[in-house]
Length: 170
Image (cartoon, rainbow, N blue to C red; front, side, top):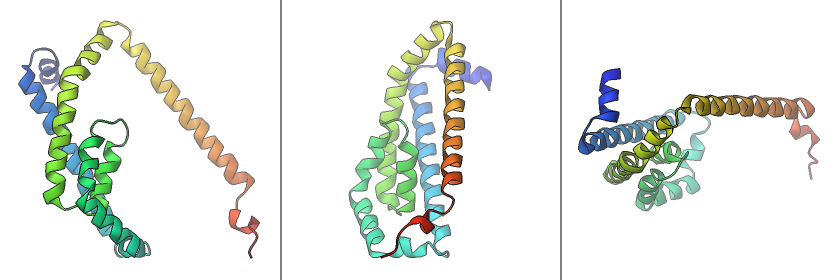
């Protein structure tokens, strides 16, 4: 496996790397869509079902089914919301006839960016001879952020364990 990845990164023709990135993005996007669809199906027989069948949500489903198709390919150009958009497309039950072309176009955009600019940045980062130091610092920063966030939430829960009781009813 390591030899294949090394070949893909160092010696593969542009087209092979492009196709690899395309299928990776296409499969990941579809997997996330189907997880969202499964979540929507699983919620149907719970107390949350009223939210999926209410008038506002039905309107949102109609909107996403008609116009949300633009959100899917655009999400491939962003950092951090791609999975959320694909899962939302599944939860909102975007029809496959609209989702599949949108995710295919998004995967084309993603693979074009990562095959060209993304790989150039990756090679430059490796050439710096200190990528592991930077990666380690980023990992440490992420761990510190998560720990501080958890402490903050724990502190706010401890200070006000029952926020409903402190509200004044009219």
